[in-house]
Figure (cartoon, rainbow, N blue to C red):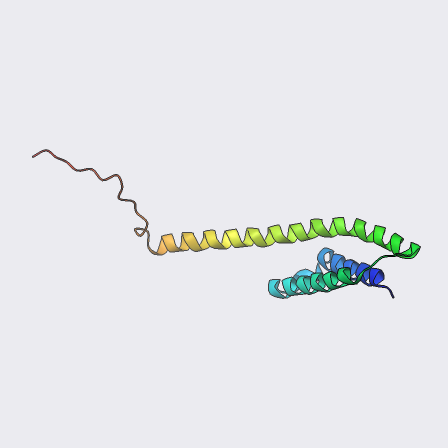
Length: 117
């Protein structure tokens, strides 16, 4: 099996993992770790792919490029989901701290001094 075929198989596996709801059953850390390991193995395979290519490898490469576009969109959605969770977590943390100590962040910039005697 050539490296192009191995790369195609890795791409299909990662794509099916991101599309499949079974991946959501894993915890976020396990999910991210699996995605990172797939990306690392794909990176290793990319470095091993060298020309000249056969006709079969060219066809597989074209299919892989099409799958790559879909994969990028799914990875972008995954990243946005993580970013959304992080921002909601930090917002929740700030609101919790304000509830615990509401007078901590008061501004005293606009104090008024009465100069009349």
